[in-house]
Amino acid sequence: MVEQNGFEVTEEMLRKASAAGDKELDRPRAKAVRYDAERVHLVIELVSGVTLDIPLPMTERHLNASERERSTMVLNPFGLGIHWPLVDEDLYVPRLVEQCTASLQQAA
Image (cartoon, rainbow, N blue to C red; front, side, top):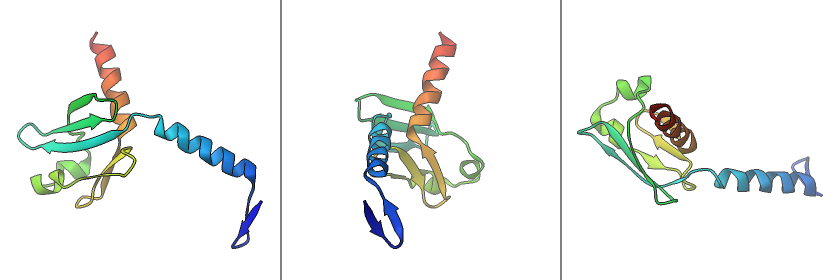
């Protein structure tokens, strides 16, 4: 057990946190992302080698954003999220993959 700032951390707590982190990294992750302004699409290259080319999910913030604001994005270090700092918007990559998969299954 480790105690820091009055908070105790047990080995069990550390094991659970490590398992949760490992599970999160098993989810679909991006290694690159870009915005195609002409088509208003996100192009996301996943670590698996799959590339998604999807319409930019139009949240209220994206609808009101300029092209510069839409194209200024940051991929988080683990590839699980995309952040648009100029419009303070975030999208979760595993959820985007899930939505694309569901759309393909419905179309079949």
